[in-house]
Amino acid sequence: MRYVGLQTQITRNNQLSILLLIAFPCILLAMLWVFLAAMNYFGNGTYDQYGEVQHFMEPEVVNMSFTQVAPWLVGGVGVWFTIAYFGNTSMVKHATGARSLERRENPRVYNIVENLTMVCGMDMPKINIIDDPQLNAFASGIDKKSYTVTVTTGLLNLLDDEELAGVIGHELTHIRNRDTRLLITSIVFVGILATLSSLVWNMFQRNLLWGSLSNRNRNEKNNGLGIVAILGIAAVICFVGYFFTMVTRFAISRKREYMADAGGAELCGNPLALASALRKISGNPGLQNVKRDDVAQLFIIHPQSFAEGISSFFSGLFATHPDTAKRIAILEQF
Image 1 (cartoon, rainbow, N blue to C red):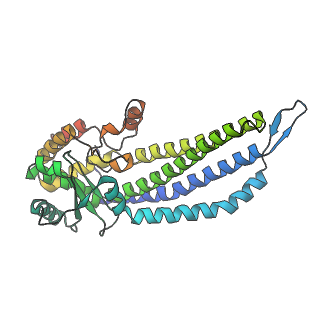
Image 2: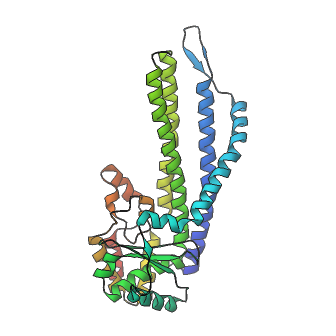
């Protein structure tokens, strides 16, 4: 694998974060225009000589509606993003069930983290713990005040000091490379799109139910066209949201995990210890109480239990983490 320096990786992550910040509102605005155009098209219709409804769109009306609604959409989503972005610590804590770890509870972890931060000359991050017998760890945060390394009780119980140092070194490298800032940005974006898609789908279901009940008193054909229109709009919005989720995950290159592995091995001074830790974690990864796959991409090993069947295939295709066996093999070559 071609060598990439620390500053180069930081620059790439910053550039990709800016690209996401630009692309996200553009996608939302495009979705809004399609929605307004579809509503205008299906809302305008005349009967031809055969009694069939002929729909048409009025571009001027669509564009006027777009210019009126777009600022409200961008402003609302902007406020939503700002709150979620700067409230990322609470968001991740709530999603994973993590809590702050005091030094007196586990001085072993604090000593390891302090030693590694002194080696690489970085500030001491916060340390959180999750009461879970499964093995995993992750780094999160967007700045020095929020940078956090989180570990599970299972990880602390089953790894020795050298293995734990390798895992923590891996997470500290993610922080140094600004990987966590990029990941938090993508998590917030995906969360917003997922919520909007869910709202649209719920609206479709309610309209479908209302349409079926009102079908007795309205023209059956027109009502059917209305339901099809709503279904089409909902399907497009949900598909775009899902596609953006996949593209975002794909954009977060798997090379970041390889680089974090290399950084962790360098910090702890023992690549074989990190390889051994990854082998142990791969035997029992995942956090049973974590239901959000976007948050799970923070983990040192992404649990495959989140996806099954066809979903598992696409999850692997767009996975943010490379195969664990390959990561172990590379570490054992050092």
